[in-house]
Length: 304
Image (cartoon, rainbow, N blue to C red; front, side, top):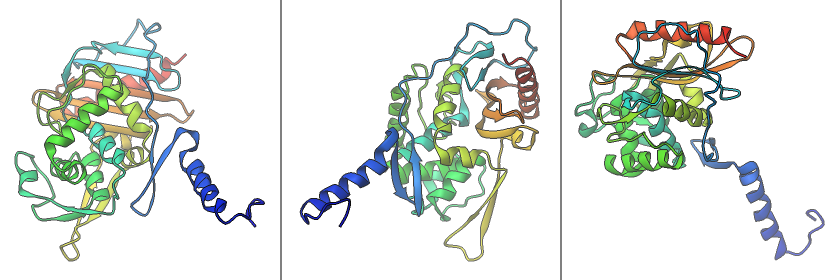
Protein backbone atom coordinates (compact mmCIF):
# COMPACT_ATOMS: atom_id res chain seq x y z
CA UNK A 1 0.00 0.00 0.00
CA UNK A 2 1.39 3.45 -0.98
CA UNK A 3 -0.89 6.47 -0.57
CA UNK A 4 -3.79 4.16 -1.35
CA UNK A 5 -2.27 3.03 -4.67
CA UNK A 6 -2.36 -0.72 -5.21
CA UNK A 7 -2.10 -0.91 -9.00
CA UNK A 8 1.40 -2.26 -9.77
CA UNK A 9 1.46 -0.58 -13.19
CA UNK A 10 0.54 2.81 -11.73
CA UNK A 11 2.98 2.71 -8.81
CA UNK A 12 6.23 3.31 -10.81
CA UNK A 13 4.69 6.27 -12.64
CA UNK A 14 3.50 7.86 -9.42
CA UNK A 15 6.89 7.30 -7.80
CA UNK A 16 8.62 8.93 -10.77
CA UNK A 17 6.31 11.94 -10.56
CA UNK A 18 7.00 12.31 -6.84
CA UNK A 19 10.76 12.20 -7.41
CA UNK A 20 10.41 14.78 -10.17
CA UNK A 21 8.36 17.03 -7.89
CA UNK A 22 10.97 16.90 -5.12
CA UNK A 23 13.88 17.61 -7.44
CA UNK A 24 12.27 20.40 -9.41
CA UNK A 25 10.04 22.10 -6.85
CA UNK A 26 10.49 25.81 -6.22
CA UNK A 27 12.05 26.26 -9.67
CA UNK A 28 15.31 24.76 -8.39
CA UNK A 29 17.29 22.13 -10.28
CA UNK A 30 19.59 19.74 -8.44
CA UNK A 31 22.45 17.70 -9.84
CA UNK A 32 23.74 14.63 -8.03
CA UNK A 33 27.50 14.69 -8.01
CA UNK A 34 30.57 14.64 -5.83
CA UNK A 35 28.76 12.56 -3.26
CA UNK A 36 26.23 15.27 -2.49
CA UNK A 37 23.58 17.47 -4.06
CA UNK A 38 25.07 20.51 -5.76
CA UNK A 39 22.72 23.43 -6.17
CA UNK A 40 22.22 25.04 -9.51
CA UNK A 41 19.93 28.05 -9.07
CA UNK A 42 17.29 29.12 -11.59
CA UNK A 43 18.40 31.86 -13.98
CA UNK A 44 16.74 35.17 -13.24
CA UNK A 45 15.88 37.34 -16.21
CA UNK A 46 17.95 40.20 -14.77
CA UNK A 47 19.09 42.04 -11.68
CA UNK A 48 18.14 45.70 -11.52
CA UNK A 49 19.89 48.31 -9.40
CA UNK A 50 18.34 51.58 -8.24
CA UNK A 51 20.53 54.59 -9.05
CA UNK A 52 18.01 57.16 -7.81
CA UNK A 53 19.57 57.59 -4.38
CA UNK A 54 23.29 57.60 -5.08
CA UNK A 55 24.87 59.58 -2.24
CA UNK A 56 26.22 63.03 -3.06
CA UNK A 57 28.87 63.20 -0.34
CA UNK A 58 31.20 60.31 -1.04
CA UNK A 59 34.81 59.44 -0.13
CA UNK A 60 37.62 60.14 -2.59
CA UNK A 61 38.99 56.83 -3.84
CA UNK A 62 42.06 56.11 -5.95
CA UNK A 63 40.54 53.84 -8.59
CA UNK A 64 39.17 53.87 -12.11
CA UNK A 65 35.68 52.47 -11.58
CA UNK A 66 33.53 51.33 -8.66
CA UNK A 67 30.06 50.44 -7.44
CA UNK A 68 28.56 49.91 -3.99
CA UNK A 69 25.10 48.37 -3.71
CA UNK A 70 22.76 47.57 -0.84
CA UNK A 71 22.29 43.86 -1.58
CA UNK A 72 18.91 43.65 0.10
CA UNK A 73 17.11 46.26 -2.01
CA UNK A 74 19.43 46.97 -4.97
CA UNK A 75 19.93 50.61 -3.95
CA UNK A 76 23.20 52.04 -5.27
CA UNK A 77 25.04 54.06 -2.62
CA UNK A 78 28.19 54.89 -4.59
CA UNK A 79 29.22 54.74 -8.22
CA UNK A 80 32.16 55.94 -10.23
CA UNK A 81 32.17 55.35 -13.98
CA UNK A 82 30.38 52.07 -13.28
CA UNK A 83 29.34 51.61 -16.92
CA UNK A 84 32.79 52.14 -18.39
CA UNK A 85 34.10 48.97 -20.06
CA UNK A 86 37.37 47.75 -18.56
CA UNK A 87 39.49 44.57 -18.40
CA UNK A 88 38.38 42.48 -15.42
CA UNK A 89 41.24 39.96 -15.15
CA UNK A 90 40.48 37.01 -12.85
CA UNK A 91 37.03 38.26 -11.93
CA UNK A 92 36.28 36.23 -15.08
CA UNK A 93 36.70 33.08 -12.99
CA UNK A 94 33.34 33.64 -11.30
CA UNK A 95 31.63 33.02 -14.63
CA UNK A 96 33.96 30.09 -15.31
CA UNK A 97 32.91 28.52 -12.01
CA UNK A 98 29.22 28.97 -12.84
CA UNK A 99 29.73 27.27 -16.20
CA UNK A 100 31.46 24.31 -14.50
CA UNK A 101 28.60 23.87 -12.04
CA UNK A 102 25.93 24.36 -14.71
CA UNK A 103 27.24 21.24 -16.45
CA UNK A 104 26.27 19.12 -13.44
CA UNK A 105 29.62 17.37 -13.63
CA UNK A 106 30.68 15.07 -10.78
CA UNK A 107 33.23 17.11 -8.83
CA UNK A 108 34.86 13.94 -7.49
CA UNK A 109 36.11 13.22 -11.01
CA UNK A 110 39.81 13.90 -11.48
CA UNK A 111 41.90 15.82 -14.00
CA UNK A 112 45.64 16.21 -14.51
CA UNK A 113 47.40 19.49 -15.06
CA UNK A 114 48.52 19.37 -18.70
CA UNK A 115 51.40 21.17 -20.37
CA UNK A 116 48.90 23.33 -22.23
CA UNK A 117 47.46 24.41 -18.87
CA UNK A 118 50.89 25.59 -17.73
CA UNK A 119 51.59 27.61 -20.87
CA UNK A 120 51.29 31.37 -20.19
CA UNK A 121 49.59 30.74 -16.86
CA UNK A 122 51.90 32.65 -14.53
CA UNK A 123 52.84 31.29 -11.14
CA UNK A 124 51.15 28.18 -9.81
CA UNK A 125 51.67 25.62 -7.07
CA UNK A 126 50.24 22.95 -9.36
CA UNK A 127 52.91 21.21 -11.44
CA UNK A 128 52.32 19.58 -14.80
CA UNK A 129 51.12 16.02 -14.22
CA UNK A 130 49.51 16.68 -10.82
CA UNK A 131 46.13 14.99 -10.56
CA UNK A 132 43.37 16.56 -8.46
CA UNK A 133 39.62 16.30 -8.10
CA UNK A 134 37.56 18.90 -9.93
CA UNK A 135 36.39 20.11 -6.53
CA UNK A 136 39.97 20.85 -5.49
CA UNK A 137 40.69 22.51 -8.82
CA UNK A 138 37.65 24.72 -8.28
CA UNK A 139 39.01 25.76 -4.88
CA UNK A 140 42.40 26.58 -6.42
CA UNK A 141 40.80 28.61 -9.21
CA UNK A 142 38.45 30.64 -7.00
CA UNK A 143 40.55 31.09 -3.85
CA UNK A 144 44.09 31.43 -5.19
CA UNK A 145 43.09 32.44 -8.71
CA UNK A 146 45.17 29.58 -10.10
CA UNK A 147 45.16 29.76 -13.90
CA UNK A 148 46.36 26.18 -14.45
CA UNK A 149 43.47 24.89 -12.34
CA UNK A 150 41.01 27.02 -14.33
CA UNK A 151 42.25 25.68 -17.66
CA UNK A 152 42.10 22.09 -16.42
CA UNK A 153 38.50 22.68 -15.30
CA UNK A 154 37.65 24.13 -18.70
CA UNK A 155 38.99 21.08 -20.54
CA UNK A 156 37.28 18.66 -18.16
CA UNK A 157 33.96 20.48 -18.44
CA UNK A 158 33.57 21.48 -22.09
CA UNK A 159 36.19 19.35 -23.84
CA UNK A 160 38.32 22.28 -24.93
CA UNK A 161 39.26 25.78 -23.82
CA UNK A 162 37.66 27.24 -26.94
CA UNK A 163 34.30 25.61 -26.31
CA UNK A 164 34.42 26.53 -22.62
CA UNK A 165 34.89 30.21 -23.50
CA UNK A 166 31.87 29.94 -25.80
CA UNK A 167 29.93 28.58 -22.84
CA UNK A 168 31.07 31.53 -20.71
CA UNK A 169 29.86 34.02 -23.31
CA UNK A 170 26.55 32.20 -23.66
CA UNK A 171 26.20 32.36 -19.88
CA UNK A 172 26.55 36.13 -19.64
CA UNK A 173 24.21 36.63 -22.59
CA UNK A 174 21.58 34.67 -20.66
CA UNK A 175 22.20 37.00 -17.73
CA UNK A 176 21.38 39.92 -19.99
CA UNK A 177 24.86 41.42 -19.73
CA UNK A 178 25.68 43.43 -22.84
CA UNK A 179 29.19 44.68 -22.10
CA UNK A 180 30.80 41.51 -20.74
CA UNK A 181 32.82 39.34 -23.12
CA UNK A 182 35.44 36.63 -22.67
CA UNK A 183 38.35 35.47 -24.82
CA UNK A 184 39.84 33.12 -22.22
CA UNK A 185 38.69 31.37 -19.04
CA UNK A 186 41.38 32.76 -16.71
CA UNK A 187 41.19 36.51 -17.31
CA UNK A 188 44.80 36.82 -18.43
CA UNK A 189 43.56 37.93 -21.85
CA UNK A 190 43.07 41.69 -21.55
CA UNK A 191 40.14 41.42 -23.97
CA UNK A 192 38.09 39.89 -21.13
CA UNK A 193 36.08 42.98 -20.29
CA UNK A 194 33.03 44.11 -18.37
CA UNK A 195 31.82 47.05 -16.29
CA UNK A 196 31.59 47.55 -12.53
CA UNK A 197 27.81 47.57 -12.99
CA UNK A 198 27.78 44.18 -14.72
CA UNK A 199 30.45 42.66 -12.47
CA UNK A 200 28.18 43.35 -9.49
CA UNK A 201 25.40 41.46 -11.27
CA UNK A 202 27.79 38.58 -12.01
CA UNK A 203 28.55 38.30 -8.30
CA UNK A 204 24.85 38.30 -7.44
CA UNK A 205 24.28 35.38 -9.81
CA UNK A 206 27.40 33.58 -8.53
CA UNK A 207 26.33 34.03 -4.90
CA UNK A 208 23.24 31.91 -5.61
CA UNK A 209 25.54 28.94 -6.24
CA UNK A 210 26.07 27.52 -2.77
CA UNK A 211 29.44 26.02 -3.63
CA UNK A 212 30.86 29.25 -5.11
CA UNK A 213 29.75 31.17 -2.04
CA UNK A 214 31.21 28.53 0.26
CA UNK A 215 34.57 28.37 -1.51
CA UNK A 216 35.09 32.12 -1.95
CA UNK A 217 34.32 32.84 1.71
CA UNK A 218 36.97 30.42 3.04
CA UNK A 219 40.27 31.65 4.42
CA UNK A 220 42.33 28.56 3.59
CA UNK A 221 41.97 25.20 1.88
CA UNK A 222 44.14 22.09 1.60
CA UNK A 223 44.03 19.91 -1.53
CA UNK A 224 45.50 16.47 -2.02
CA UNK A 225 47.61 15.61 -5.07
CA UNK A 226 46.17 12.21 -5.87
CA UNK A 227 49.06 10.73 -7.88
CA UNK A 228 51.79 11.87 -5.48
CA UNK A 229 52.08 10.07 -2.16
CA UNK A 230 51.57 12.28 0.88
CA UNK A 231 51.57 15.42 -1.27
CA UNK A 232 49.23 18.31 -0.56
CA UNK A 233 48.87 21.91 -1.65
CA UNK A 234 47.42 24.65 0.53
CA UNK A 235 45.58 27.64 -0.92
CA UNK A 236 44.83 30.96 0.76
CA UNK A 237 42.05 33.29 -0.25
CA UNK A 238 43.42 36.25 -2.19
CA UNK A 239 40.44 38.31 -0.97
CA UNK A 240 41.99 39.78 2.18
CA UNK A 241 38.62 41.03 3.38
CA UNK A 242 38.11 37.51 4.78
CA UNK A 243 40.45 38.73 7.54
CA UNK A 244 38.38 41.88 8.19
CA UNK A 245 35.65 42.35 10.82
CA UNK A 246 33.06 41.81 8.09
CA UNK A 247 31.82 38.41 6.99
CA UNK A 248 32.67 37.72 3.35
CA UNK A 249 29.80 35.87 1.67
CA UNK A 250 31.36 35.65 -1.80
CA UNK A 251 33.96 37.40 -3.90
CA UNK A 252 36.93 37.34 -6.26
CA UNK A 253 40.11 39.30 -6.86
CA UNK A 254 41.80 40.05 -10.16
CA UNK A 255 44.96 41.59 -11.54
CA UNK A 256 46.71 42.11 -14.87
CA UNK A 257 48.77 45.05 -16.06
CA UNK A 258 45.84 46.15 -18.23
CA UNK A 259 43.21 45.85 -15.49
CA UNK A 260 45.27 46.94 -12.48
CA UNK A 261 43.98 45.56 -9.17
CA UNK A 262 40.32 44.58 -8.97
CA UNK A 263 37.92 43.19 -6.39
CA UNK A 264 34.28 42.19 -6.26
CA UNK A 265 32.83 40.97 -2.99
CA UNK A 266 29.67 40.64 -0.95
CA UNK A 267 30.05 41.38 2.78
CA UNK A 268 27.78 41.35 5.81
CA UNK A 269 28.13 43.28 9.06
CA UNK A 270 27.08 42.22 12.57
CA UNK A 271 23.62 43.74 12.03
CA UNK A 272 23.04 41.41 9.08
CA UNK A 273 23.22 44.23 6.52
CA UNK A 274 24.84 43.29 3.21
CA UNK A 275 26.81 45.32 0.67
CA UNK A 276 28.04 44.39 -2.80
CA UNK A 277 31.33 46.09 -3.63
CA UNK A 278 33.16 46.39 -6.95
CA UNK A 279 36.45 48.25 -7.32
CA UNK A 280 38.30 48.22 -10.66
CA UNK A 281 41.60 49.73 -11.68
CA UNK A 282 43.22 50.31 -8.28
CA UNK A 283 46.98 51.06 -8.66
CA UNK A 284 48.22 48.73 -5.92
CA UNK A 285 47.45 45.43 -4.23
CA UNK A 286 47.30 46.68 -0.63
CA UNK A 287 45.63 49.89 -1.79
CA UNK A 288 42.84 47.79 -3.36
CA UNK A 289 41.80 46.46 0.05
CA UNK A 290 42.40 49.78 1.80
CA UNK A 291 40.04 51.53 -0.60
CA UNK A 292 37.58 48.64 -0.41
CA UNK A 293 37.44 48.85 3.38
CA UNK A 294 37.02 52.63 3.28
CA UNK A 295 34.11 52.32 0.88
CA UNK A 296 32.48 49.49 2.84
CA UNK A 297 32.79 51.34 6.15
CA UNK A 298 31.29 54.44 4.56
CA UNK A 299 28.55 52.36 2.94
CA UNK A 300 27.32 50.75 6.13
CA UNK A 301 27.17 54.20 7.76
CA UNK A 302 25.06 55.50 4.88
CA UNK A 303 22.50 52.75 4.46
CA UNK A 304 18.90 53.98 4.37
